Image (cartoon, rainbow, N blue to C red; front, side):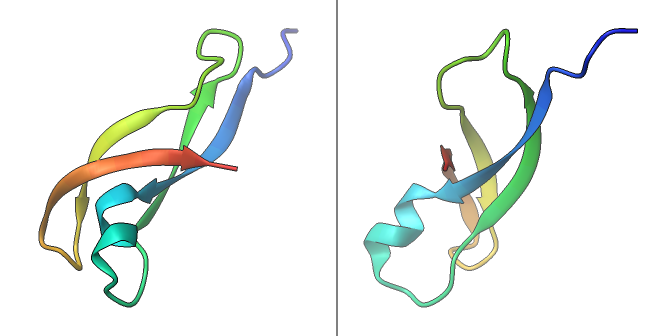
Length: 59
């Protein structure tokens, strides 16, 4: 059987950090560490800012 190459990653909003508003917008997703070696960037909905923003993978 094949070993699992998928790992869980946490995505955090970049615009929310810069806005200075309290709280954070984070999502948990998975990625294949063999195919996607660099950090991911996805557009996700931020419920605090009430709009779609760029979320980057954090360590």
